[in-house]
Amino acid sequence: MTDGDLQLVASKRELRSRAAAVRDEINPLRRGEWSSLVCRHALEWLEETGVKSLMVYVPFRSELDTRPLIEWCWANERKVILPRVHADTGELSLHRVESWNELAQGAYGIPEPAETSPAIGEEAGPLVVFVPGLAFDARGGRLGYGRGYYDRLWARFRVSASGTPENTVWIGLAYGAQVLPEVPMDVHDAYMDMLITEEGMLNCRKKGD
Ligand SMILES: Nc1nc2c(c(=O)[nH]1)N(C=O)[C@@H](CNc1ccc(C(=O)N[C@@H](CCC(=O)O)C(=O)O)cc1)CN2
Ligand SMILES: Nc1ncnc2c1ncn2[C@@H]1O[C@H](COP(=O)(O)OP(=O)(O)OP(=O)(O)O)[C@@H](O)[C@H]1O
Image 1 (tube, rainbow, N blue to C red):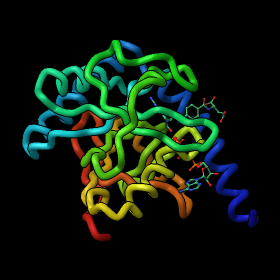
Image 2 (image 1 turned 30 degrees about the horizontal axis):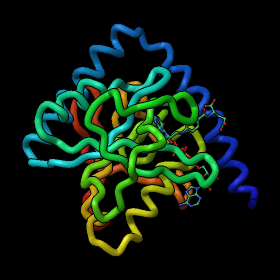
Image 3 (image 1 turned 180 degrees about the horizontal axis):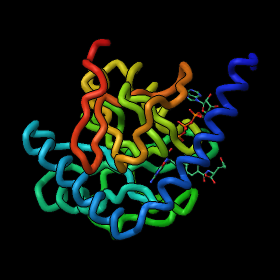
C-alpha cells in the first residue's frame, strides 16, 4: 500500500466510527419517523417510474428502517430482492423474498434469505438497488462498514454482459445527518446515483458521467 492508501484507510476508519456514533445518537422515535418518510419518498418514486423489481437491505443496528418499504412492495406486486452475505468470498448473492418467514439470522446478525433460498442470476437482477451506509455525500460517495460488499456488487453489475447493470439505479437511503460535505473515496468505491433522506431525493449524477 502507498502512503496515500494508508491515509485513506485511516481516514475512513475514523469517519466510520464517528458516523456510527452520530447515527446511534439519533433518538429512536425520530429514526422511526424519518425512516417512514424515506420509505414514502422511495415508494412514490417507484410508483412514478413504474419499477417492478428492486433490491433492498433489511436493517440492523441504527440503520434507516426499510421494513415499511419492503411491506409496501409485497402488497403492491413489486419483486423484493435481498442480499445474502458470503463472508468467505466477500460477495453478496441475490434472492427473491416474499415474506419475513423466509429470513434467518445471517452473518453479522443481519436477517437474510435462509441458506436454502435459491440465488437469482445478475441478468434477472434488480433495476434498482437501495443501499445502506454509514455516510454519503452529494456526489453519491458512500462509506459502508469496510468490507466492500456493495463495492463488489457494483463492480459485478458494471461488467455483466446482459445490459441490465448499465441501467441499474443505485440509491443510498440515509438520515439527513448522514449526508456529509465529502466522504473519502477510493477507486473501488461504489457511487450512488441518488440519495433519499427524510428531506427528499437528491440526484447525485447523470448516467454516463
Ligand atoms: N442491513 C445491512 N445489510 C448489509 C450491509 C449493511 O451495511 N447493512 N452490508 C454492507 O456492506 C453487508 C454486510 N456488511 C457488514 C460488514 C461489516 C460488519 C461489521 O460488523 N463490521 C465490524 C468492523 C470490524 C470488521 O470488519 O469485522 C463492526 O462494524 O463492528 C457488518 C456488516 C451486507 N448486508
Ligand atoms: N471491486 C472490488 N474488488 C475487490 N475488492 C474490493 C472491491 N471493492 C472494494 N474492495 C475491497 O474491499 C475492502 C473494503 O472497502 P471499503 O472500505 O470501501 O468498504 P465499504 O464500502 O465501506 O464497505 P461495505 O460495502 O461492506 O459496506 C477494501 O479492502 C477494498 O480494497
